[in-house]
Every structure is written in C-alpha cells, then in structure tokens.
Amino acid sequence: MRLNRFLALAGVASRRGAEAFIRRGRVTVNGKVASDLATQVSPADQVKVDGRTVRQQGFVYVLLNKPKGYLTTRSDDRKRKTIYDLLPPDLPKLAHVGRLDLESEGLLLLTNDGELALHLTHPRYKLRKEYLVTLDREFDMADLPKVRQGIYLAEGRARFDELHKIGSDQVRVVLTQGIKRQVRRVLAALGYRVRRLQRIRIGPLMARGLGPGEFRELRPDELAALRAPARARLRSQPDAQGSSPIKGPASLPPTHG
Image (cartoon, rainbow, N blue to C red; front, side, top):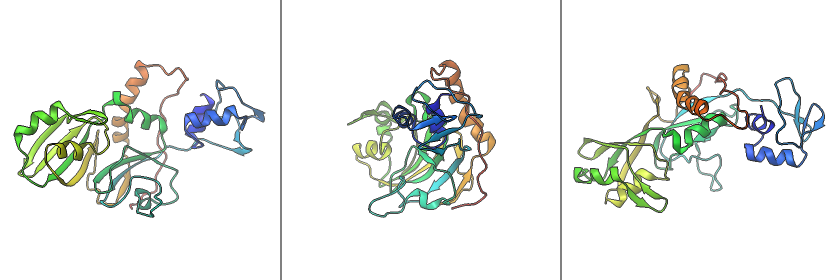
C-alpha cells in the first residue's frame, strides 16, 4: 500500500498530513529516507517517523449512545464534558463519524478505520440516519411537502428524506444529508421548536438496549452491513492510490461507559 495510507492507518496523521511528513523527509523505510509520495510499503517493512517505529493499528468500531449535555469533540477549552469522557482511556484514538450537538442524544459511530469513515461521510454514500423528534406543538401535516422538497439554509437546500407523524407532537425523521443541525434548523424555519432530538438509527445500526452513556463494539453482521455499500463503491471506482480492501476489526474490551 502507499506510504501515506500506511501512516494514516497507523494513526500518525491524515493522508494529507502524512504526505507533509514524507515531503519533509521525516519518514524512513528500512533505514532510508522516503521522500517519494508514491513509495509502496508492505507489512514486512520497517517504517519510522522522526526515528520512532510506527505500526498499523487494529481497527475498532464503537457504537455510543450519547446522552444530552456531551460535546461531540475530543476536547473543549471550556472544560465541558465530551463523548470521549464516556470511553475508557486505553482505546485507540477514535474519530467520530458525523456528530450530534450538545443538546441532542442518540447513536454515534466511532472508529479508527479512516477508509470506512471517509466512505460513510461521503455525500454519494447517502447513509440513512433516523431521528425521533419531540416538538413544542403538534406537527401540521400541511408542512410535510415543505420538508420533503427542502428549506433553503446558508449551506443550500436542506430536506428530509422521510417524515412520519407518530404522535401529536412527535415525528420520525430520516435524513441522508449531513448539514449541521439540519433537523432543528429545518423545523425552526417552519415555526417549530425541537424539545428533544434522539438519533435512533445509523444505516443498519440500532441501539438494541444500549442505555444513555453506554457503548459497545459493533457485531460482525452490523459491520458487514455497514461496509457493503462502501465495498461496492470501491469496486466501481478503483482507487488510483492502490488502496487495499477494508480490514477487519480489533477486539474491544467488553465494557460500557
């Protein structure tokens, strides 16, 4: 595989950041400086950055049920609680795939598999996310065509793929877009205030008894279902950088946050 991808999978930096390391001569392969971005490496090669050996990490896939009041970020200069406070410190460095705002609750996927995270967040992937939304008043079904056609926000037209009324003041919303605070902003544009927002599904992933603040490793069948569209994209669009197939997960300690 290409050296920049190897470094990204080892958790050194993003692919772009890894390219900067390579250009600056900070990376060696088998004792020789590797300044060519096209350098290929194998598991048998010894790769070092600034003299320190780096190795690929095993992949970890975590499903977290985020409670209200936690930020979807690694750190906060105001010392507020973050989702990483809910995870044990001995886990590899995990990135969140998408986010939920401070007041929102529900499912978040975290992983160190950069390839899969990239595919899941790519607009072409159209990952379906489902939300249970409690409003400050009854939803008027006359507004249904408006949320399906879309409301124009600063980022462009924001729309719901589906909206189902399940109670006088509760609706179930399905999205494939990824605009910041999309559910709240679209409904606010129509005069509704969201009292509670819960993400209850990410693609094939559901909570299945996961309490607020708890997490678990993805099951093999869930991971396979999540990967399937990504693999289809890889087959239909060959990677010019010589990407290898997405690898299997590492074991996660059986604990909950």
